[in-house]
Image (cartoon, rainbow over all chains, first blue to last red; front, side, top):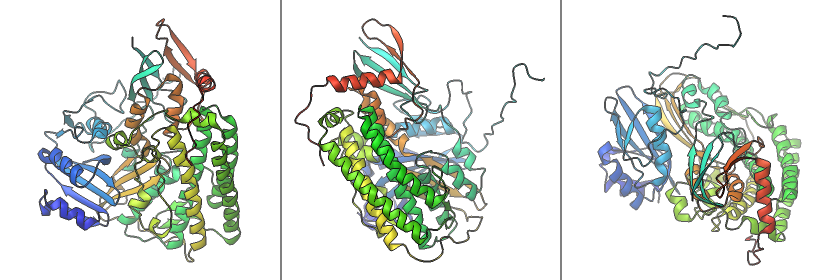
Length: 155
Length: 400
């Protein structure tokens, strides 16, 4: 399936203005968070996008942008969705793509986004004593390294 | 009766510190769980504070074995953002190093697989021959591990005539040796019997869990970024995507041996076609606002970088997904229904690094409930013991 055929198929269930084709083998589809699971299921059934490479989160200030990168045998399709910073909620796509769980866990702890219906909500990368409310990949998060204390050293 | 066994976080069979909790009934693993983050270095956050040229060297240090993969993946994307076209000679040298790196990574893995299966001669042989490719990489780039050959707009070192001849000679020796390994494998029934049926992952499971690289290819999934998304270069050389339908550690071994042979083919084509001209162009420091998705087939699977530029000399965001993270979900599935003695083999099969070996594993004896600490050497001895007492599966054939 080449890019044009993929776009033709995408147009049957996504509005044409939501589809972008900035480079060969790269197709971007924008969708509302409420329609994400339905679009993922349709894409998996019709475009064969069962291979989720990863989910990228971007802090854009007022809102968070999430990109679901799908690879297939002729290029890649990227689903873009935006959620407001004031109410960061996202539906889980694990029902359609079971392999997404690790990436959704990463998104949850790095951006403080609540992924609804995630099968396994535990943190993935942060340590057990990670302070609550700290989301490292948000742009306003700054890390101040605590001063090193050498036992028995000079005060 | 079920017992939980923690393995790690300081576990020798893994390249990174990782904690795996196994739930066992007797010798059989019923469930497995992963806990990551012991080696999280915040590279994505750090990349936002570094310029594009600095980020090449940062990306190179994400991994110690496939270092060139990350820097190439980043450079491919950054060059699109900076709107520069590297000269053909530079591109060819870049991917020559890529394929040589794949050879060194797979030969390393074959040695580890032989070692974990109790076939140490194989380990000695493959690692001796790996030195040939390591020496070639050192001659090309000046370094053995972090080659630092990539730069924005090309590569940093050229190849001259005598070096080209040395690479041809080295590849001829390596090809002969790799074909010899196929022969050894086919005449060594204990090795084949030890690997067959261990760490099963069906095609459907591999697809559901988004496995990548040789792990997926050994389950019959023919996904290879070099074929599917041939970023400016891989459509100019001929090679085949290797798959296997065995769905076990034996299949992963077969895929890697055959992939090495394909890489020799690619290297020889690169050297024969190597165009004349400059190796790099000058690159601007600032990139116009934009975004790019860069994909690359690393030795372990698909590597993806997503870069956003904001008009300054630093990227707004760099998202990195290394192939091993993609394979963790599949590893849990492979461990399920396996034996404790197979754990080293299954871990090794997704291609971790064993050089930091000899730490301890806490184990609970299922019958007495007694906790004891095994050194990794004990675990390996148990694995080898199992191989020795295994009823020889006469009907298993070397599938090459």
